[in-house]
Image 1 (cartoon, rainbow, N blue to C red):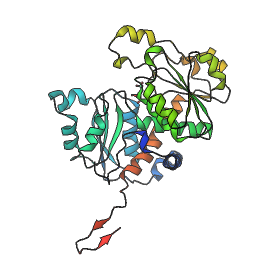
Image 2: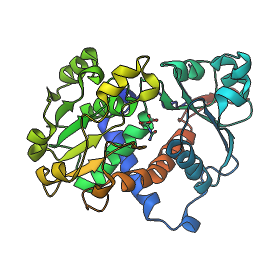
Image 3: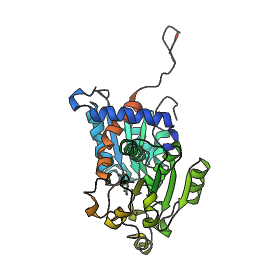
Image 4: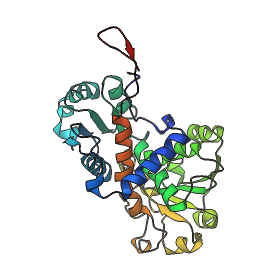
Length: 322
Ligand code: NCD
């Protein structure tokens, strides 16, 4: 992988200082009227290659690139409409598309596949979700939303609820929370979708207080951020297992009564029944504001990715320039 190319593959690459800078920059973008935004991506092309369904991630990446003055080319149903349908490897597709674009945004069902694509390209690659592994840009949006809504990222109790086994957004957010201080995480999941014990151990070793809980209503009064997730039906081979996990934890009026008045409810969306729509009008329901935050956060990220590292180059007359 070329050291001078900025890929976004995992949340583990970000430190606290970077995160706070990114959030401030996203806030600046969010506050600006579109016509006042400097076209920092003018002349640049983003290619979005999506081998799995998406609404928010692809469209908000494309909106963010367009707002920055750049252009977008897109393979929306890449699994069926690109050469992947003919058996082409992700590496070959990425190599070729890197010749057409200045930035690739890839979603793929196989864990590790986006990193494999990044290893063979000389343009930045952003992971928009690789199987059940990671969804780093969603986690950035989630923590940015916490920062905006709660005014801080430290000293909070966060309940991660639902599919903590296959849910890449929850896995990435849990890892990103290791950059915060004094955070307590409750893991609340049906038995078949509990978080991988290796990841739980990773979080604890990084200094997070992590506790598994069964009774969401009982812990709700302690919770500042309730992060609800969808049971990832597409990743189950056994429909009975999926059915057993579904409907176990639902955010409804009863749960909202147990949550503190200052708490917020987040969800990466789409929801399919795990948040009752009657909760939507509660001011603590922050999930649609969270989705909206995707555009300014991704603008800040694209700006960072497209800004070259200060690399040392050798000029034609033999002198080094910084
Ligand atoms: C998530 C995903 O695709 O991982 N959605 C998203 O990007 N906002 C969560 C999900 O599909 O449940």
